[in-house]
Length: 455
Image (cartoon, rainbow, N blue to C red; front, side, top):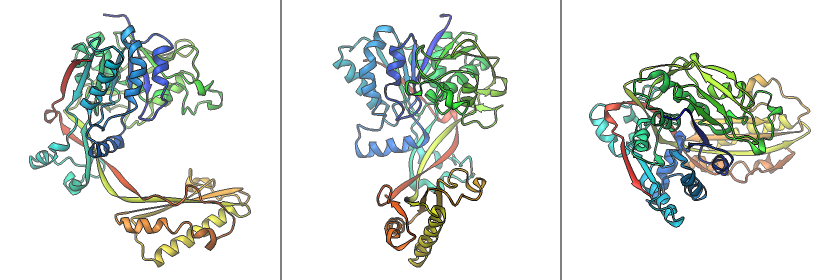
């Protein structure tokens, strides 16, 4: 057993900084590279892509990235865990195999493929057997939106990835696995933690939570003394330096920008936090109130004292469904009386929508530059504002009505208040709304599948 391993975060979401994983591999020693690509809505986007092209449905950025880093990873023995597979894990793995062949690396490493999270083809069977998959927020049964569902995926935990690593995989590709599991799996694999070692499993889960959002733990999006965060243009992504007892250091490569300190780690710990006593994952229930942090040197924070409890009998399910249409339009009004002009334009537009008999579930107006961020808490806007952007959006089930709304913004330029300085973005575009439906399902209903293949 090694005394410590270093797990580096390379992506916090699909679309994150493209060269961050390359720099994590090149700028210093690491043992594992963790790449988190998936958010709740991402699965529905990938499902649509695969419907148009059966070879699509995964994070396309992942393949050219592997072309850049595979030679060095193979040379140095760096393992990669990534949920880049989306709804086409096998297709993603095959694309990586093709890259390996082109690089002359065929047969020199193994790829782990973790599937079993995609529930789309099983929904009707599950519903017919009494699994209502009720919305965790509204308690509605899934049957109320069955015909509009676009994707349905259970959150797999770390153990299928552990099985792939134990089977010799150097690159592990999953679909909808938990963000934290991408870090926890290497820790279990390296240190041999038991599936009932709740304190250590919780520590690994919290380590994963700290680095799952990339540079958000190392100075990016950091409220604490944000003006003083050094060299964000060269920000270093975080690294967990973990020990077998479950304690770990959060750090980053030397010579990179940003910072790792207790405040930056605390801010990330609070990200997406509900009850701090019960951070529930498929692998354990972590108690965030037991976390202890201390500075351990420049850009080094020690994390220790973590306690956890047994995992629940359920997995969370991420379901997306079509929920109508929306469009958002903007106009900018200039001084003098910028805010007053924007308010007047909003009233005029709403009156015209009423006259046309257009009905929407919601019409939402924001005055950017005056109170869009803080709403009523912003107080009465100053009459001396140099400019205000009127941003108005509609949402509803009738696509025709939403399309007609998009044609009513431009006329305000000549038929509304004076001082319009820009028709920002042109005519609004009608977009399909993808809504999120969280649910729970018994773990006994989900059977992860693990393959380990030669590259």
